Length: 431
Image 1: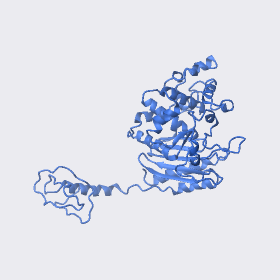
Image 2: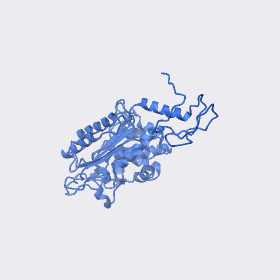
Image 3: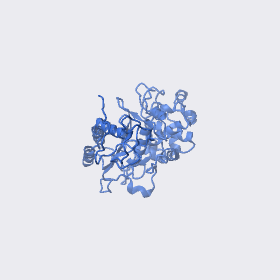
Image 4: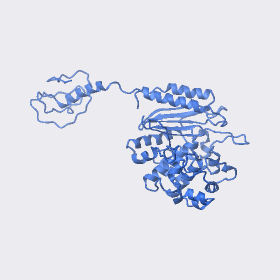
């Protein structure tokens, strides 16, 4: 279609200018008499070298109107009320006493809400400032995020053998065969759960400090050759946290604060909360043989025996703080982060096929479909999801193990809520 512009378009009364033209004036033949445009910005609409005196500013304004109309309606605000109703139903059905949820993009929060109460005994209402025990979400929000920075700073390579940082990993091998296997175990194996380590053992029954826990893990035989299979292992992320600490020259908790939480403004993410924070913390499970609950102390027994300092669990945080990390990873994916390069994010977010049944990212779970999705959940009822293709994230924190872990209703409610959130974003035209 050919567009015909009039020789002397008249200014429409009350029209708003879509352009703020500041192109230097040119010598023209012949020019209109100067007049103040309808947008009230004299001097910002210079004469252009166009036959008949048509000014560049007027043409650009007209083009702005035309192509603005061709673009169609802008994306609307997502309606998260169906997701809110699902979460409220979860509280009514006692899947969890309360929760916080945050949905956002790289540059804005789309939804931040709190529902329910801290417990079932008439406790305080949950707010967006409520702290939840992250459980295994610690693996990505803490340990994995630290490794992203160590890789970016050249402190480690994911293909480095674990024994480079933890020599005792070889020295304490219980057999010659086990030592031969351990020589091939890399940081990549630990972060993808393909190292051949045992999934879990109740070390807390006989060990009560971090050093003793570490030694117990180092003397536990591997179950298989590294790369033979995928076996989700708390022990592997415990060792990964120790390797990060030795590579970074500081305890893991200090590296988390220095490399991750401080730079990203995550002021509500911490380990071993002070007693004064207890009113803000959602309690988890009743402690064995006691009347009190785990409240302000980490729920995971091995992490608790490890003084709350382990790589697999121990962090407490608000949903909004986890949203800050997720938003930064979305910026990294777009090449717009000052904290993390796109190349490092891509390395952690791609499938690492070290075992036949693998395909996990470094630290992260990856959904096996056309969408690029990173996610991780925690045993206490926590969840972090980053939709790289949709360019959005969602965080859902609950204390579903309160008052007991013998509660299996969270999974169905969470799946429904996630689906409702994604549908709300898609129906709005995306983000």
